[in-house]
Image (tube, rainbow, N blue to C red):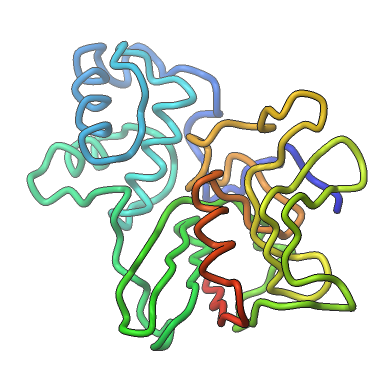
Length: 234
């Protein structure tokens, strides 16, 4: 499977700053950035060290907050985002309601808008949820079923891209090559090609597969041991 390690961001996704840069000095004060980082961490958004620098990790955390709070996903601590973040009504990043119209019963639900996935049991209880990275231009919205496709195995413990990467705990659910798997790891040293804190953003893109954390890939591997419905939503 071909992997795209980095993809240019869509206009709707990042408009004010680029990943890895810092915000202009007059945009927000250092004390405000520290307050925002503290608040983001407290809301499960994973902003990293409280250092007063609105760098890549803080931007990714801001995107997750904006996603969870139905704000434009700019990655910028603009006045609207900052006010919402500091409000008592701010919603957590790591616990989100299942999107409406995703059906009922046991299923896996993917929101490409939120870059998020939910594992839902037969009683409708969310048993696990977390951030993802995918490529919505490749994987289309719709309902799929996990299992073998195009003569290929339903699950592969250590799949490969045919080159230097492993796609661990690969669970196939869409035609042929598309499935869930851990963020790809290098065969040479076992390191992931990017950090977990990029999950839940579109600062990276796969070639259609759903990248998740190592622990989430294990959870999906177990949850989808048999044919499991997968609902992909925009």
